[in-house]
Image 1 (cartoon, helix red, strand yellow):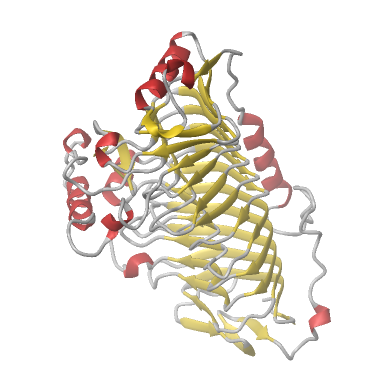
Image 2 (cartoon, helix red, strand yellow; image 1 turned 45 degrees about the horizontal axis):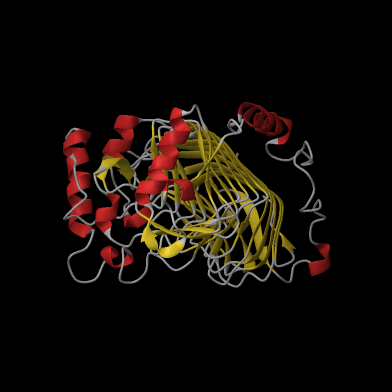
Length: 488
């Protein structure tokens, strides 16, 4: 293992240097472009990584075990059409009461499907119940109210990793089993520059003071039941939050224009998200899919374009995350396509409960507005263990910043009592057509990153210097940058 890198080490795009005792050559001119690595077909099925690469059969066995445990819920063949309960798809009638009545009738009958036929249905908060599949037919659109009062009374939620009572998510479930949202319809949050998004900054009122109060409440140990926001406050709700649920399915739907995070399963078990489109590139903090403190998660065949991270794994923030102390663990992301976003697949920044055993396979990412492909972010206030993140066969067309970024100075915080433990990150068969920087790896002086392994990766058209700082055990094996092999 190379010696720890305790100083700022710049791996330049045109020279060679010794970093931590290992020779690292980056840039063109030392080898012809044609001499790049012979990579496996990016479309090859899972399990084809050579046994000599990172992860190997052990990682494949973990993926297989996760997939065996994940089983989407099934529902009785009973159908409850919301129009029979008074809903009208005329983009004018308030259908909140009708949709809730259909869900309750389905639940009381022992479960089934609540059908939203084609049409535009205005509604406030929709609360799912056990054994209910909310099925949006092709051409169906739930157009959510822009009035915050439509999401009262307050409900228990997690706001950016801290528990409180706040506005309901537009579609919400708490403590339910066997819940689903399926079909080819649309959940339209209808957030815009004058509804919800304007709470993020600018002149008061905005969310800043409420966020400060909430974080202080958590630090002081104020009971969650006393952390009440909602009316008169400015903490934005999610579009879709499933809180403490078991056996969850999201299949085929499109979500768009959320006030903040679009899809937020939190403290859930056995979650399947497949064939979902997130079309929300313009809003602030509009993460696509944020699985927080969840166990056994499958995200597959999704298409995501957001104003923030496309897929993020989180586990609570600071003191409150440590109080709950539940990791995100055992997740598979495969065959997804990412466009706009701050990160393609991300861990953090809320990492206090830990993020472990995350497997990414066969994804494509590309956009002038995609800042990073693989991103891990935390700081010494967050803490938590981030380990066994295994990425294979990711094809990046264009990225706007560092392709791989792992940093422990998120939000410019470099001191604190809870340094994260980040180690065991493997990335193999990653190909990049163009980006400013291949690697941005920033540990801290007293908290280095450990055991970062890149295997059979190719980075082309890299223009800026790559930075490695405070890293122990960085291993580059069959890695090429601008046609030059840079193994150490």
